[in-house]
Image: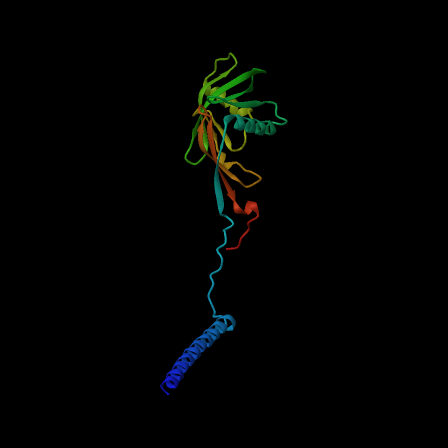
Length: 210
């Protein structure tokens, strides 16, 4: 008799555990179903940040004076097409400008050595170190006046005879790609030249709306 009672109690205990576990599983299934199929709560989502069309990225490009020399002279050759007076640039220990100037119904060779000075705004000032036109003895200022008059320079290059220097406004160069260029560092003796290039996103077709 006692054994039957103990067996019945054990059976009832397992039934309770079974129904408790079943109830727990049912509750979990209901919660899971609600999460999967229930209504989605409204959430305020901030709009994705767009790049402004004026935004840009900057890169520092390092090169050698040989590479820059080829680029500069290719530009000058294109600039002087159809011109009567030609000149070229040679990047050595300094900037050597060579050409010809009309003097007394003839032309005489021009040679100017210039020291590049990088300015804070990314432009360059070429300070005259020596200058001559053939065997003629003329004041430096007068020679630079001839240069300003007869040598065809880009709009962003200014010859200042009084200061005996040439101002190269690199930052004002107009490029078809809309890239903006400025000078980072120039050391001709160490053959170390660096330029900062700013690339607007719109140039890459990244037109965005604010």
